[in-house]
Amino acid sequence: MIVASEKLTLRYAVASDPEQLFHYTGNVASSKFLARKAHINPEQTREMLVKLSTSESFKTNGMSVWIICLNETESPIGMLTLVKKGSVIEIHFGLIQKFTGRGFASEALSLASSHCCSSKIANKVVSFTDKENVVAQAVLVNSGFECTGSIENFYIAVHLPGKGRDVYSYLYAGSF
Image (cartoon, rainbow, N blue to C red):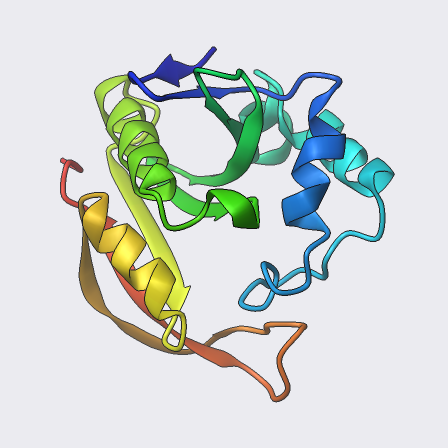
């Protein structure tokens, strides 16, 4: 376990996670605003987790994937991707579709961001979301992030037509 709240636990992946998380990583609709393609099978999700969801991931890859689990079932419902850039953590989130709209993403983001700052993993936590992704914007605000501006042509969303996508940038209010 990395950190827990009353409802959620953030932890590294276990062997049974890829099958469940494929409902998120393999969902084209969930990948709409991402810079990666939807996974084609649970094995692809497993390979990603083996590489990026360990206690050594920050050291070996500069990033880490934390699994979001419901405490009552101990089942994974989504994941957070954290990218370490010096003393800054860039955080991204995604949930299995049937768990959206219930505040879990906001709670997980707030829990992870607070943990990163209080444990000195980072002194600043930031995030970015596509200007068209209104739901993600609300999740970030509800989890304690403040919009700090916008950036043009920040990334390419492989499931959307066109070139670079414009984003809003966010800073976690608990950053110091």
